[in-house]
Length: 407
Image (cartoon, rainbow, N blue to C red; front, side):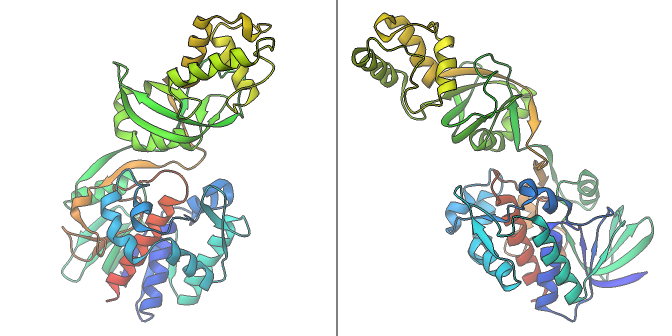
């Protein structure tokens, strides 16, 4: 039976970051990472389309925490101790430069996730951290000295254990057996499946919108704004992904059949849009509506909404009735679309669910139920919108666990 000072279950972002920071703070500790698969850091590899969206350029803890539908309150304190600026410095000190893109997402300047993987594996080699693959933990036993971890090939002893397994139902079951409560997982980041002739011929088109999820009575339940991307299967883009994250628990009972209202003009009301359309009618009486898109909309979208409003291809502004313009103002600012299912957002499958947050001390990320048991990353009931925020949660948690272990 092998004995260790610290055993970290999970060879992903949170696991490696915890191990490296723990070993740096106390090089005398005997540390190992147990990974159930044949490869480590697989999610890091595919993240951000293979570029690894390391973090997000938000430097105020209160603003950063706003991006977490679950964990917002709990992460505020930890972000005061380790957040975006610290992440940038951490990687810079190890020879990895990060860059900020227009939307705030941060990537290695190499545009390759392999840069992050190489950094982590070089650090574990340098610090003498063992990485043991093919070790699927089946049981965790509490002992007087610490813990016993049972995997099919071996039994490991450890004084302290860190769980960094992400959304792993088998590990959650093991933690339930130890007395922890698990919030059942539901998908968090997903795109909307919509079959609608208004968008059927527009895949690849992107534009700024505001969008709402409606109740059965047509009342707005959730709202979001930002870029919306029309896809072959429906709608995606930041505005939709934000809705999916904030509405993860609300949308799951509907089996992902619900109604959304899209305002293609972002902030204009139906009345304001109608007023501007009537003014355009006076200004351009002889012009066909199809010829020039208005409100800075993409031309193909403008033309599709004209058709949906009953305006013919050859109609000029002078011949458009007030009823047709009223229809168009509704299509522009309050278009109703039926969502009939969801699709996973790229390979970045994120779930809402995990260890109940009240059972964790967020100064140290230690279990309040089992001393010397720590958590980092998505094993907790914490998740974020897309943009590097889930990784920042992993870095912050991993750093504070390492600090607590080595005090």
